[in-house]
Image 1 (tube, rainbow, N blue to C red):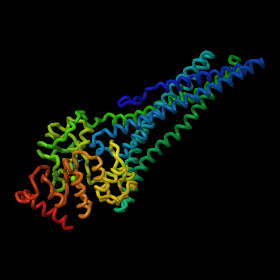
Image 2: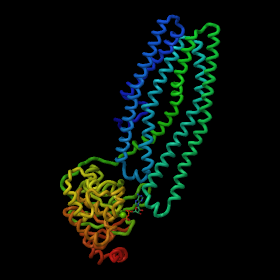
Image 3: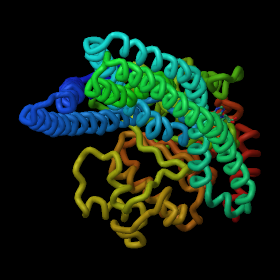
Image 4: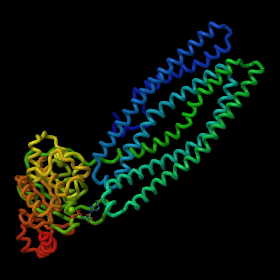
Length: 565
Ligand SMILES: Nc1ncnc2c1ncn2[C@@H]1O[C@H](COP(=O)(O)OP(=O)(O)O)[C@@H](O)[C@H]1O
Ligand SMILES: [Mg+2]
């Protein structure tokens, strides 16, 4: 398993080392073949020729078997590496603070999890081992050649050095292209994700043409980059081939001259040529190494940046089993990067067994307060207390277990109604429990447990998906139930049913309701009237109506018109 912060490009596990050893053995065997061939050509006796040929066959067979074993081990290491890398990234992506997802597009995160991990994997399990083996192969071949004929070897080394030096600038160019390519690919992925997520809006606003134009632009950027890469490499590729051929010619000329003056045998020349052919691909590997390294470094950087992000703060103090009231004291909060606080000096009490309503105009900070209570947002001043425990000192999972939140943004995912009901539940729940939950939320028999909800709950009506969230909250049975405009999409009749459901679920719980309907608010035990991030007044509906003209005006402007719709 890979551990966070430990991803290194230059690290080999036991399996990879084994694979490299096998490949080295295979190479050693195949390096013997030209020497045997030399014997076949130069030796006069038929018998020793046949035995050399037999040895060649044996070397070939064993070396291919070893190579096959090595390849299998490396592929296996690669499969494992990419599985672990992706898992590591997904784990990390589940632990990051909520703010991180607001700042980074999902599409580019997909791209890091899918593409960058693949580039890093390729480097560690394919490029690096093959470079090591290539290095050994080249070194061993040159060693053998030196033992056979020093002058001839020097000619070969010089020729190859000349060819290799032409490859270096190519590595630099490719590094640049590879980095840009990943960046552009991640943008394509981000746009694609956004387009599919917003397909309804796109259709209803007839935005296809604009969306397509933007996407075409992204693809065009990618295409322009590939075209540049293609142009550079279509010139340099053949150029390198010509250079290589010229080098060969040079070596052959020198060799044939040595052959003519009798200082080199035909068998020797043949084995030289074989060694030369044998080291072309290792030398190519080594030449491309820097290019691949640069690309992998770029991908690793993107991955490491994600892994280096701080997790959601989780100090880990467990919560006592006994229930307690929830209190907010002098709470002030500004969103990161913003100077002016959204909430200022709020003090509120949420009592067990009581329904507390948060009322106020849109933008007053009600949802922000809920996000702070549930610790989706952090970085507040003041206190959020459960009994006398401060929220930021408590274990995060334990704290979140305190709440069931039913919100306006749709929290339904693709699957069956039952899948949605069971989501995140650790206790076992029977079918009849689930049906009871549907009954409590007034969804039974309107929806069956096996009804498909579609992605984002697209196959349900908004009212159904809100009631489904309520049913889920019922099963979750957390001590605090929060409804943030949860009945906003319901007709008065279903709303009344949901209110009954809430009353049934709410017994002995802390209930926090944000609503725009008078009927919901009027029977709350306590109302906080929020405006511009501050508590303007608190009390029961009648008291507020009597004593707070601002509240009366709000009720008349905002709530009554809704009621009469
Ligand atoms: N992620 C955010 N970053 C910056 N400002 C935000 C963010 N979310 C909400 N706001 C701002 O905070 C204010 C309060 O928003 P919100 O809590 O959603 O209000 P309400 O739920 O009462 O309608 C608004 O002015 C809104 O623009
Ligand atoms: Mg809101």
